[in-house]
Length: 402
Picture 1: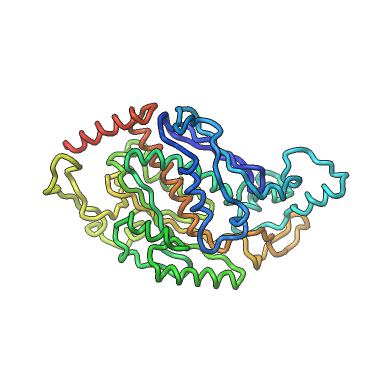
Picture 2 (picture 1 turned 90 degrees about the vertical axis):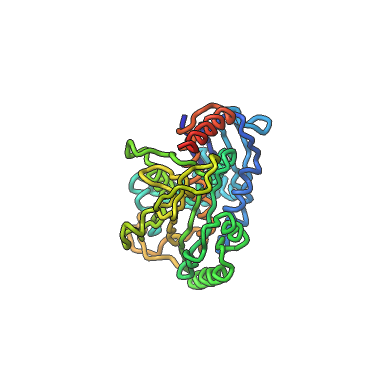
C-alpha cells in the first residue's frame, strides 16, 4: 500500500490537520520527532512576524498508541495561536451581519486587491470568490507546516533503513557558494548549515546572504534563492523504467515542484548536462577492488546523474537542486488591480517574510522524504516495520551477490 497524505486548514483558522496513511505498524513515533522539524521550519534569517506568534507543536489524534504506530492512518493537528485574533472573520459559522461590530471585523479582513505572483487572481476567478481571503488563506505557505509534519513521519520511517535527508542553501539573491568547493560529505555540510542563520554551510557566504536579505528589507522587497536537497543510503532499484509514472525522477520533480515557492528542480548536473559531452556527463562504472560481499560490487566514478538513471535509484546519493522565487507579498506592493472596483491599484500587503529560502529547505526535505518512503514501501511491501526490514535485508543480500 502506498503512503499518501492529506492536509487541511487555513492560515488563520483554528488548526492545521494532517492525515498520513500507509505508514506500517510498530514504528517508534513521538511528538518530538515532528516538533524538531517544525521548529526548524520556523527559523531562518528573514522570517516575518508570524513566526513570533506561532510555536508549532503537533498532537497525535489517531494512528499512534504508546509511542508506536498501529498501522492505521496517522492523524495530527497543529494549533494556530493567531486564531484568537481571527475568531470572527475566520469562523466556520454563519455570523450576524446586522451586528455592526461583527460586520466591521469581517470587513476588516476583506481583500480584493490581488498580488502578482500569488494564487489570488487565478484562484478568485476559478472558484468565483469576491473576497480574496478565501484564496490566500489556503494558498498561504502556512500549509507547508503540515507538509513538514507529514515529512517528519516519513523521516522516522526512513531512519529504520539508515536513509537520511539533508538540505542546505547554495544561494540567496546574488550571494552564492561555489558548489564545486563543497564536496560530497553531505552529513558534514548539513551540520554546518544547521549552525547558520541562513542554513548555508559556508560561514563567510552566510554573512553575505544576510546582507542581501537586509538590503531587500530596506527596499521593501523580497529575495529568493537556491537549495540543495540530498538523500543518502538509498538502495539501488527504487522506481522503475517500465511506465512513465513509475519513474523516480518524475515523482521527485513533481513533489518538489508542488512546494509554493519553487520554480525549478534539477537532479544531479541538471541543466549543465546540456553544456557538456556525454563522455563527461555519464557516471562511469567499475568493479570495487575492495569488495567483500558486504556491499554492492559496482561503484561510480562520479554522481552526475544525481543518483537516478532510467527512472531508478542507482544506490548513489540522490541530489536535487531547487530554485525558489522571492515571496510575492512585498512591503512596497507591486502594481495590480482591485477585482471589486475594477481599477488599477497597488497589490494587497499581508504580513510576510523577506526571505523563506532557509525554511524552504526544511519543506523540501519533507517532500523528498515522502517520495522516498513511498517508493521504499512500494518496493519492499509489508504491514509492519519488522516485515519490511526483513524484505529489505534479503534484497540487499541479493544485490551484493550480483
